[in-house]
Amino acid sequence: MKHLRLVLIILFVLLIIVVAVQNYAAMATTVTFRLNLLFFNHETPPMSIYLIVIIAFLLGVVFTGFYGITERFRLKREIKMLKKESMGKDQELQSLRNLPVTADEVAPAEEQGMQ
Image (cartoon, rainbow, N blue to C red; front, side, top):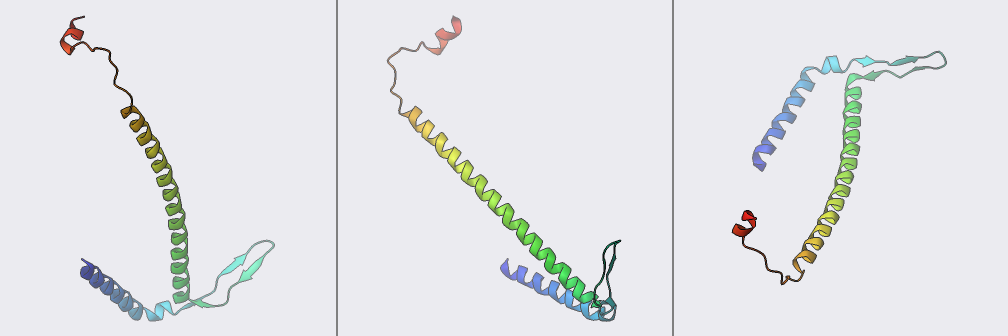
């Protein structure tokens, strides 16, 4: 299974390289972003589309990583809470198991249904 995964990753990277080489001219085009507000005007220096794609990818990786970390901490906290609850229920069960057996006689089930 690990070998199949490695082969699929290599084929995916190869596909990305082929697409990048075939579309080099279009991706090498430079663009400039402008922000014109009433009180603020800003224009970025010319950037290639390759740079914009790489920046967008890295921002996606960072935001996804932060989301994953927060989700992991939330799940760890939930696991701790559930373990604590489970331990409490186990202690309750043990205390109920250790109760002394009473000497009261219990009527057979057939007699209880008749009454």
